[in-house]
View (cartoon, rainbow, N blue to C red):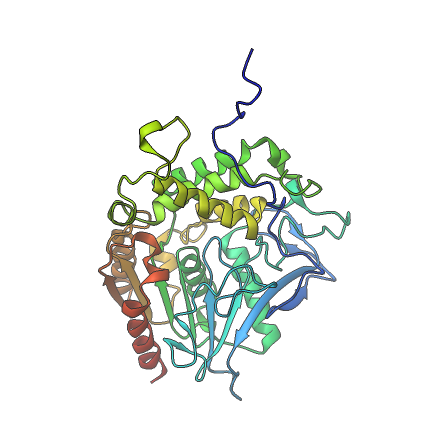
Length: 398
């Protein structure tokens, strides 16, 4: 007979993690603003299905000038949201994810520009997503939420631009999944983008990128507390936080590099190596667990699946005759930035994109940031990337 005291799993998680970290109506609003559309007719999605009463949560910084010519759209990555800049508080469960880039006197200078960042469609911090209430049932969408694409996200952002009176963005900028949105903006709305910057991103997900995503999604979906996507009635501690934490841990490894892990953690144990058991941990394991649990407190498992899948589906050439024909639709000058050590969105992808744009007659600059930080370098290397972005913004305004 098994030992009654032996845990069912070697990994344990705190019992106070909510079933979802999604923002819900009634929660503190913070700096969010909201825009709702598709109230009279459905918003039809690229791959089928539709949504009604679509709400987009967004934040702004700075002032829009009289000609609406100084607006910059900042596009967030997979687990980001509209809170690109600002403090952590009751309304925002993490500090601004680009605090060193967006603000007065920074690379994206809010004394000069009107900056907008919108939580993407399918997200979980105020924009319509799986945790939102389905107007047809009055219950969270859960497993009924449809598949969305990067193009669907961009179309919702275009509605926000219309709402704000912005005919064309002075600049559209983002990294990783944010960069995917940037490319789609440049192709879908060439007349509405005056310049763009894409960092650590791609015109289409590769087989290896899809593979890493598939592993994370599978780990999440195998958590029995995911309940097929309908877990919003679960008690605190009874949601799919273990699956989401594992998915995040897998991703976290791809976001950094062996050099960074070795420098920070090496082989240092967290528990005594003299009596090391099967489930005792090294310091690096503790780091992964910390980031997994941290995400589970501020994110939604279903949103993770939906947005992660949207990244897999990203392909600028789909339905347009391939990358070259899609690239010929771009009219704006671009800046494309690689992180030298990025092992997920490798520099060759950005180099090929830049070469393609130049070959098709577009104006495009390509830069490589020498950094050991890996994919996350686009978030962390503000001292290197900031001056590049600031100069490109200034040059684009001339």
